Image (cartoon, rainbow over all chains, first blue to last red):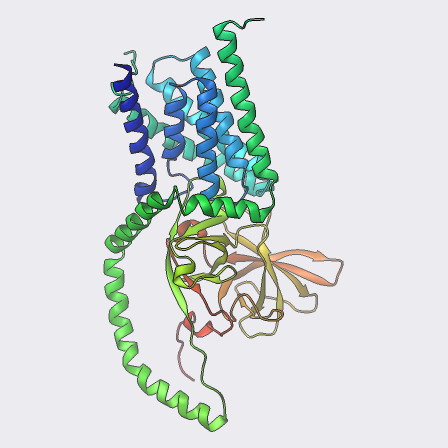
Length: 164
Length: 284
């Protein structure tokens, strides 16, 4: 039973990773497009131990930094912290409700962006303010919406019970 | 002392977290060439199939959306092409009369921009071409409306592009008539959606009107990175004055990186490409 659940989890994560690359050219303004790679990490993190989530975050961060090597290492740091906190958040408090899950994805995405930008230090003054106050929340919103849909569609595969 | 199972697993989690943080700091503090080497190694191995998928996806999107535009462009290009042969012959005849050598050809490679998700993706982009296509680090990149950036590093079939929005980006610039020169850099205080640059070091006695277009000057030592004549943007106002010696002008960029999906990498940047961007005006 556990093996089947894990297989399904891996299948959903792989689907999100593939869709991240395939759908990217179709997602319009990329400053607000959902980040499915981060979503896959968050979906994994809420089901994993904090240590395993941190290692997964480190791997995803390495991939993100390799794709955009502006501030190499900032992505690793940000994804590690977000995944670790997400796993702890699940352990300490996690209501099985769709809005809470969406809020969780929103917060995770926004916090990731904050950590990447602050650690990187490449954006300053109004550019940084605009990114954190406008574009990052919008991206977090779209990521949260896609995350909620993904949870709803794959709730049985992910073994998530949603309270009505 | 024997650790309780919960305590042990909690400590194991903390150790894993701290090790990952240590790795992150080590990566952040590593020298830039080491960072680029790791980045390129990951892109050309683990990520290669995923980037291939993204590239194919970008091609499908382009072919679907831009089909009608391409047909229109093709028709107008066909009309212009009919005049090219006569112009080429005339040009060769005049060059021979003046004793000039043949015009240098412009070598270029078209590429798809593989946009990424990090918030810093507006400063750097991945391109679908690399060393195998003749692209080298340092090659300039242009979009249909103007300057886009420069190739920072390249692997066999991928390249990392430093965009004009990056704080380290600089380009020697001039006005269209070639009378005023300066250095263009991204404006640190601009809003991301206005895409502002700064034209720095313009002599105090030179005044630029709002609306003046700024181009790459092609100046450099020993050779320029950017060819002469690529549009950079349009002057929209005066920035700061530095102790009465020079002025800084604000320039609205000709290209907004977020809206670019296809670019051209110029593999032979020493030629003047200005005529490729100027729209033909009425003949005197």
